[in-house]
Length: 307
Image (cartoon, rainbow, N blue to C red; front, side, top):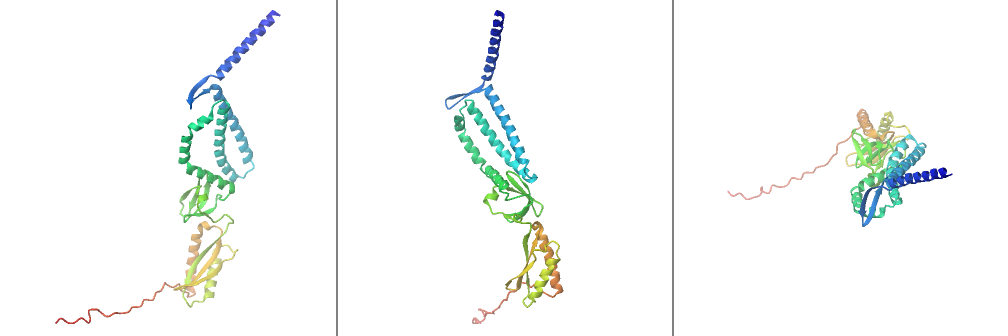
């Protein structure tokens, strides 16, 4: 009995020593500092707590991302991942602050002391945050998708990449236009392909007074029907726009499936219209102006002769 009692006492002493060593190791102060008259200590236990919270948060976020992206289309999946990265950094920051607060660190003092720094960073990165928010809105409401043809500040481009901060579009002269995403919130953007694949385009032409207007209409419609890049339905149509100063003004309207290359289609139509007008003796007049000349008397003509 005595030997059993001794062994239990030794066991209790060993357990107490081990537990005490672990507690001492957990509370070992790695770094201490003072903020606002309050002494703050960074212990090994706090470091392990932050790392543990960081790891658990990473696992949870990864599971959430896999669950959501598994139900999305491939095109929407890349957009969600871009937004999720921004959300992930925000969640990490919140988790770290909560871990520090639960460990006894006064984060209010820490945030107050860093307020000026946060304000400065916020002002410096104001436009960056606007771009990120704009990118989130674009991805959520799908106001812009890859492949859309847009017009901004007189430039037309086809969107080929949408990122969280910027959108990239290829212009008609094969130049890349990099657009900050906040532009899609604050500026007026024309989206040619937002609602449907076809867009209506037009070509205007003037003919001489006295021309057969019905013949002009027939020629314009025939030129449109022969062009393979113009869709058959909706059908092209012609409008008699105006009695101009020097010409009768007509416009040919038609629909195309790729408005990105409509300048080429319009050029082909103008070549064809000019050819058909020449065959049918329909002239495209030059601007004409009547100039009236009224001769005046030479002021030196009636002067007296000094001789």
